[in-house]
Image 1 (tube, rainbow, N blue to C red):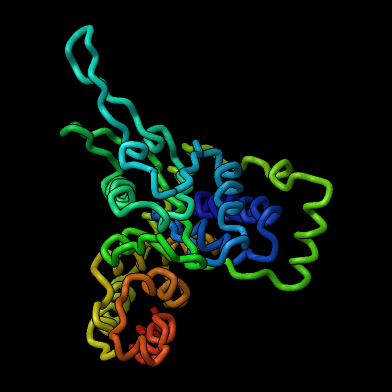
Image 2 (cartoon, rainbow, N blue to C red):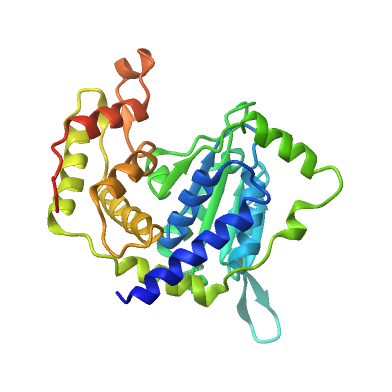
Length: 319
């Protein structure tokens, strides 16, 4: 990859982080990981308590990236046809006409509180995430490129929510939590909301074509065979762990490699290092494993177990 391309991506991501940080204060690491996910052309699940900025992050990103943006507020009465569209009979020529859904002309979709809608509606969106198309009455309709979903959910007030099945959780490249801000950041947030709209100061940095070019550049980042084997060893360790009932899937292994490439590019490198893999492994894989009942009863977290796997799997050493 040309050094000029690497530097251009690095500078663009730095500028995006700076703009989004005007709205999401003190959370540069979360913003960076969301940007890495977009570079890797993957979907993001923000799983956290209410009010910490999940929706604000998605809105600010949409504005900064210059992508066509839409928001779906999921409630129990949202139907699959609202997402993927439906066919209407045209009496004039006795044919059915396809009426697009809310995702058909959108590059960035905020699926707000995805766990508060029906399983059928969840499945309709998650199928579109996987296939990058929707099928209505046997006809496939391509979605725009790029197509990124940022879904949010929280477990507070869980009555009436529909937990995402494990197979559908696997569709998300990463699951992230924003968390509460520290004291200084909270002071800055309160002061900044007194007299101005924080979104008004957010500038557009890229457009859709530039985002596509950055995603293409991410795929071109070099990952050497010893590091590929290292990812395979980490994945294999999750499948042999006595605390894990269902280990990381091959899709998860590919996701780790793509996210590691994005990590490298955002640090102005065109090659992956072991630290890139270690830095993304837990965020990419914690939602992909299913713990045993004994481990859950003991209060063990997926993050804890994956941390032990990182500690125990042999390092590839100097590449």
